[in-house]
Length: 306
Image 1: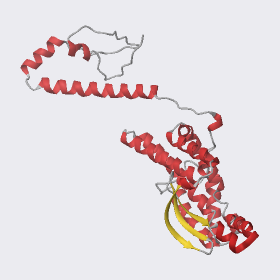
Image 2 (image 1 turned 90 degrees about the horizontal axis):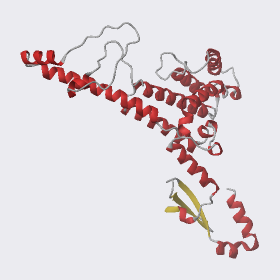
Image 3 (image 1 turned 180 degrees about the horizontal axis):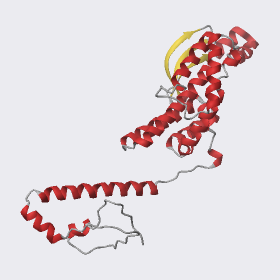
Image 4 (image 1 turned 90 degrees about the vertical axis):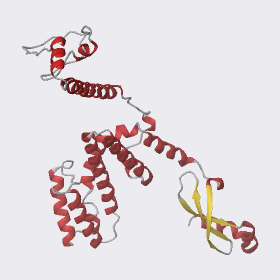
């Protein structure tokens, strides 16, 4: 049974030396190898003639053992890490997540938490990966907001900002590694046209669509499967489960009266489960019946459509 491998410069047999016992494993070389052996008796002689040597030797040995133990623990933890999966019927697409304002915020919190966890574990490679995914996420959201801008002047200014921030090799948030060369060239040409005013407003709003598609594919490949198995996604499932529940008055807390009319009030309320503020209109049905007669139902129906 092979329990491990040693490379050039590594140590073996230190446990037996510390415990003054017999070896618990055999070592076999798979090629010509030079091994430097230190006998216990020779070490004792050196320690007796060099009083400072034992502390330095055992400090080195302890550090070496601690490093090996850490690597072994990390390797074991990675191999035992559970792969959380969910039913296909409960999975939703990344497009649905990122285009829903509530779900989108949950995905970003997942990316931030993952980056923070990697930083806490001093895993710089994983931290850099999640920082890159956060950049992809932010670009997609900003590009979506760009499409809602009202006029050519606003589009031209925002297009230049997006290009300089995300499609510039000198920028720390560059997406050049995640988008195709043709896409980058098309965007540069299109941005110049938007700035020059030679492109229609409708066409100007579409110039980042191809880059968004490529960024979304990179996001899906980089983190979405893991996100579906996270507690963050379970929160989204809880939100989806509430979509079919009609809220009642008990689900809201009254904050203050915003205004009053002839037949009722508009009240600032907070939904208890999420803390979101709403304006709730309360109608006095009896007063409406007295003043509007049989047409009071039509009036209430029209109020519901506002």
